[in-house]
Image (cartoon, rainbow, N blue to C red; front, side, top):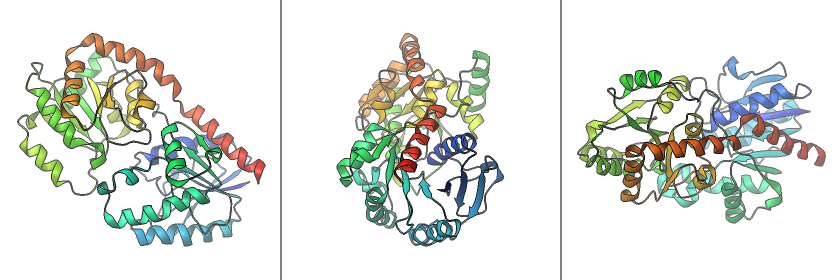
Length: 376
């Protein structure tokens, strides 16, 4: 079978979020199924690190999908032309978008529909595009993989899609995430946090990540903190954030907030494992991979009681109202000041993390493909 795959988010040195999910799943299924030929459709010059095995053929499809008009041209002209030329039997798209004009069976992975709930978090031209096309992608995909039961329920509710054509396949953590020794933690804290213990945020500085409320809660927490706890923020900016900058500049304890920007996976795993707790209080997530990464790192987790986060965290995290600054601050105080609570959360996280495994996810992903092979 010839399988075409939209791999536009496999970007050298810039794998984030959905790109990492694509990497983990595709590397496994390509290696596990040498009897099939995979054609990876890139929208720019590709890196050989993404040619996972001999049965993977990289193909560059134009144009680069950087803006709405280019998104349209890539998906509705570039990809259909490529799958016709390749005589592909199946199109897989791991980023929630697909080609309406490609006349072959389509499997699409949906991560979240946050723009339906928080349209104000997205530039208007991008919003117009996704609101027009994503419902069509859901309708026209022959099968859908949702990364959580929450996302599956959302697709059914928002787009009136038959739940029987949607399978839930969980994400997992990069295997690089693991606990560190106390000596290793001390070294990382000296490097990034002036030798202090710290709470950690990981992710893009996007509005739905709720950094404004997180910073305000941290400022409130610091009013009674006697342990010199810092806040370390790892991530790159998405669009301009004047509200975020205003909040930061107004903080009484802004000197205790440390921005480290983008980190390599190896370095990020060390920063994660050396923190007191992950503070991940997004207003909306389709899954929330950092939660599982924290479980693998043996650290405590503070996360939101909304969308998919309770599904992923279970009883292994402190759940907070992301819109309630006092609630977030109180959770910070509990985690920072109570070693026994941290120990309890870590132990529960060790149990919880067994649910999330990339090998298992890749096997389940392939079973969905087999359903399509049988049907078609």
